[in-house]
Length: 310
Image 1 (cartoon, rainbow, N blue to C red):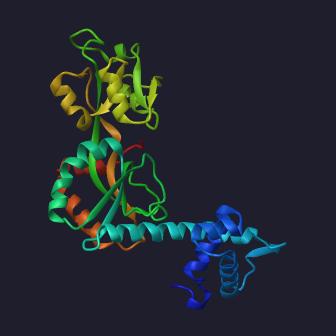
Image 2 (cartoon, rainbow, N blue to C red; image 1 turned 90 degrees about the horizontal axis):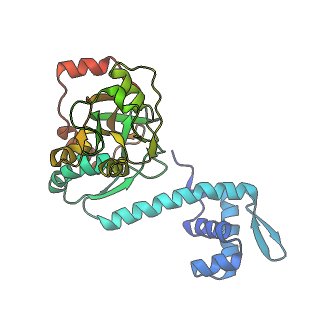
Image 3 (cartoon, helix red, strand yellow; image 1 turned 180 degrees about the vertical axis):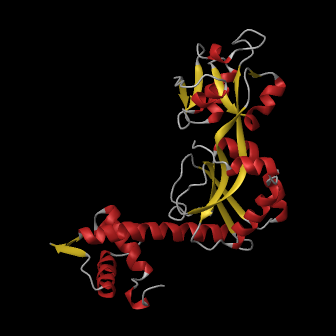
């Protein structure tokens, strides 16, 4: 519930306070906002009157915000940024709404992007914005409707929809290892490539091959795309998701040199639990739900048995 209107400073006052805090002087704030220094001073005094709190220290014609005022403005700045982003989205799509989605780069490119034309065809008025994020963050604070998440369904304060489970396959450039079967223990002597956020993947893969307790080291990458290229160019053996390397396996740029194994995590659509979904997101959630194959009873039972973290 909103506080009484009389306790809300005007937008003009908040903009003046934010500029004063960021730029440090009344003159600089006035120049940026195309106002006079006197107008900035009056805006500060107006905000003080509405809030009933002293916001600035007046020292020889200078205004310096109090520590409490600076903390207040830090919160106001986030609200102003959210308001600015909402206004931009409205201007960009006045008829159909907007949808802002945080995606994982590899999953977004290889799983989501090929399916998006059907969403655009069904909802041509929705303005879609995609931004890359590699780790969980505060969805509401950053203005995102939803995110694609790898791991467990444990994003704080969010609901989850399972999109896809993942299998990883050890692959290498054709010339890196001799032709023919490769034993798992042989790979322990090879240069291994791994994602820095999932360094336990290789240990789990070796354990599944009957070699428990392995904690191999290797060259670290922050994204699958660069690790994939490293494997193609012979840097070492990479453990990569099957959906990402299907074309490389077909073309012969990479070859599988071991068994595919189920990953510890899965891919989820996540969205803020306590925020009512906007119509554009509700349409997207319904659409993407239809893109997800229904699990077989065996698959449902396996998931019910639990899964590890990423």
